[in-house]
Length: 338
Figure 1 (cartoon, rainbow, N blue to C red):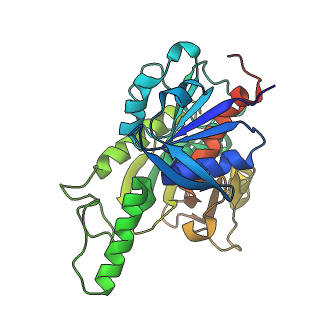
Figure 2 (figure 1 turned 60 degrees about the vertical axis):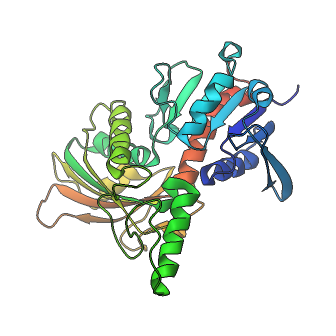
């Protein structure tokens, strides 16, 4: 039987490259078509598995020959690709870009954070949850099964890579220019991010930080609705001067007092890398390229006997790519109907 064709729209993006690696390392096989530039006449030379690869422009023929289409580029590119796709053929659409969030048929998915035994809705269009929302829903869902949660507060630290290569490049250029006593480039953030923390972007930034925060909030609320005992936390997003990876400082107050052993029991198990106080706390540099998330630096709140602090770390692109491939697996392995 011929392996199904898979298309990745936005293959040239950082997230697209991660998705290519995860698919290549899976046992799903398939003929992967790399689609990048919005210009159908554009061809980009790239690399895949150590071999040369070609990334085409938005190609109607390759899109409609694919049984699964991942969207891993800009939201605008996703929306431009949609009119080219013959939906009557029922390709599985998996959106990591956020471009399909407003479609009524799009269903939110985050396999890493979904409860055991969860039956996903039937659909041919899935929106992947924001990685920070997946992290919060997984940890709060597990804690709530151990002890009811009264309230929670999460301070999230946004990496530059969430704005793609442009964000990473601008952070790098700002750092180099500052150390060289040159003017700071502000095309992406419209503010100095290097050696700094930002509660807001500048007025001319390519997006708004509060818009990203609201997206995380929407996705977190939807995922926590699957965990009946987990309340919605208060959220605050801060742009951090880091290239890659999410860090979250999470404070959780329980109805009753929990000892460290009970906390460990609640959180232990895949895909959580749980680190006790005798182990070094996780950080985004060491966790880059790893699946799941790491939880460490767990401390009882000295001013509230029922509250605990947690430090969460994840590779944002690996988490998103792993979840997207998990959603596609039934279709690619032939265990779902077409």
